[in-house]
Length: 190
Image 1 (tube, rainbow, N blue to C red):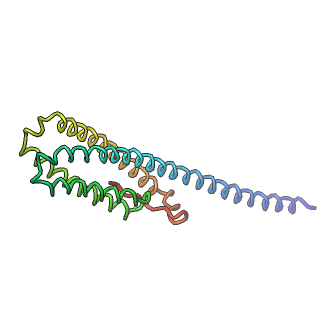
Image 2 (spheres, one colour):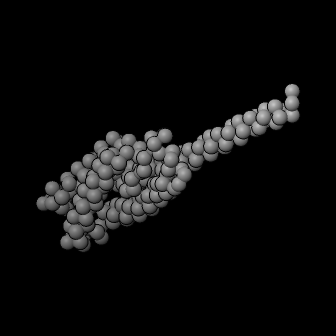
Image 3 (tube, rainbow, N blue to C red):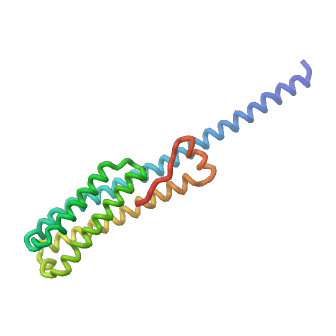
């Protein structure tokens, strides 16, 4: 065997070695980028869990508040019923939610908007009847609802931050090359 043949053999092995090394680096990068995106998705799911918990707490507060207002605001029964129906619609939307699905989140947003509108009408009614707000039972439920609403707003902000972090990571180059490979989609904020 001549030195030229040995040199050609070594060159061939080294060229395949570099190709293999580059392929290994690409695969390791792809796995690392995919794991980072999955951590972001897990953060979204965890943030949704916190938001869902606050919505459950609000669901526990609204019926007793509406019940306490039924007798003194008997003439406003449709407005009180609208609060409970909007809460039920929101719960149905949350129960049907598929994580990270834009359509499901749009339904939750619509139901949340409807509940906010119904709660605004309820607050307007209470402003017309300040003597009701002075009642200890109603004042307690109103304060509890206000506290739950504040915690829900914070949880919603955390959820939206998690979604935005995921979307930014997904859109960065070269990570965005993984979108079609793994069927990843951007998430929707609330």
